[in-house]
Image (tube, rainbow, N blue to C red):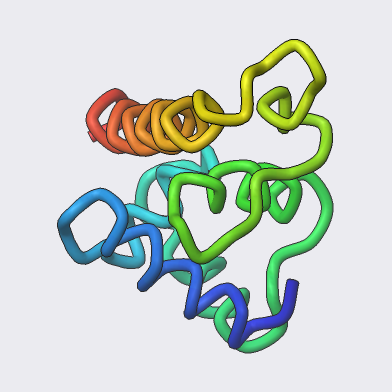
Length: 108
C-alpha cells in the first residue's frame, strides 16, 4: 500500500462509517499507542507495511470501493443461492463497518 492509497483509504473508511477519520483515529485502527500520529503522517508519504498494511487491507472491506478479499468471500460458493449473494455481501460490509466503529470506540 502506497502513501496515496493510505490517504484514500482514510477518506473511504470515513465515508463508509459516516464520519471523517482523524490521524489519531487511523492510529487507533492500526493499534498504535495514543499520540502516534507521527507514524500516520509518515505512512501518508511512504505507506504502511507489514501487519499494519494487512490489517488495513481487511478493514478496507468496510467500504464498497474495495473488493471483498478472496479468503473472506464466502458468497460466491455453489451453496449460496445467487439471489441471496448481494444481501449477504451488504451484511458482510456492514459487519466490517461495525468492526471499524468498535475499534475506534474501544480505544478512544
